[in-house]
Length: 396
Image (tube, rainbow, N blue to C red; front, top):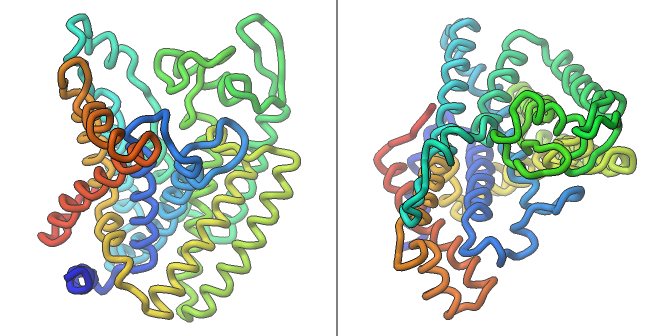
C-alpha cells in the first residue's frame, strides 16, 4: 500500500519539474516545520535547536538551504518563462507582486494570534502596535526580488562577482564601521548578541518594539534584520549560479561531480574563514554563507545522484508532496500551530494539553516533545497530500 501510494505521487510530477530540487525543497521545509513545532520548547534534542549564538547545528542550515533553493528556482523558472517569450519587464513585475504577497503573508502570521485565556489581552497593543516588521517570509520576499533582478539583468560572471562583493562588503561594514551604544560609547568590529553593527541598524530603523529580540542588550535586533539581508542575497546568488550550471550542463554525472568538488572546497574555505569571522546564523556572516551554501550544494548533488542517476525514488514521495507546495505548507503549519495555542483547555492551551496530558506521560519530556512534532507533520501531510492529489499548488 505504501509503495503504491509513493508511486502514485511520483507519477503525478509534471515532466518539466526537477525532481531533485523539489525533493530537496521538501526535505528543507519538512525540517523547518519539524523544528518549529515541538511539544515544549524546553525539551528539544540538540540537532533540532539553533546554536546559542556562534556555531552551527543542523537546524541552522534550514533557512539558508531554502534561500539557496529559491536562487536555483529563479534560474529555472526565468529560463522557462523567457523560452515562452515573456519579457524581462513582465517577469520583474511579477516578482514585485510576489514579494509584496510574501511580505504581507509574513505580517499576517505576525498578527494572527489572540490570547482568549487573558481577559485583559489587547490585540491592538500586543500584536498590531508591536508587529515584527522583518521575518522569515519577509526576508524570502526581499531576497527573491533582488536575486531575480540580478539574474535578469546581470551576466552570470558578474553575478559571481556580486556574490563575492556582498560578502566582502558586508564583512567590511561589520568590522570597520563604528556605531554608538545607548550609553554613548563608540565601538566597532563586534559580533556579539545585541552588540554589533547589524543590531545597531535594526534598533535605529525598526525600533525595539518591532524586532524579534526586543529585550536584547544593549541593542534590540532582528535575526532577519536589515543589514544581514545583504549576505542572505549572496546565498540566493549561489543558488542562481548552481541553477545556471544545471541549465548549461546536461550531463547528470558531471553535474554531481562538479557540485561535490565545489561544495567541499566551499565548506573548507568557510571553515578557514571562520577563524577570522565567526559562523553565525542570526548575523548571516560570510563564513556562514560559504559553509551553508556548500552544504546545500552537496545535499543537492546527493539528491540528484540518488534520484536521477540511481533512480531510487520511492522514499522521496512525501517530501515531493511538501516541496511542491512549500509556501502553502509553511502558512498552513503557521496558522494551525497558532490555533492550537489559542484554543483554551481548562487553564492551558490545546497544544499544552496534548503534550502535558498525553505525550509527556507516555514518552517522557524529550521524546514526547518530538512525538508532538511528528504528529503535527503527519496531520500536515494528510492535508498537503489531498492538495497534491487534486492538483492544488498555491503559488504566491
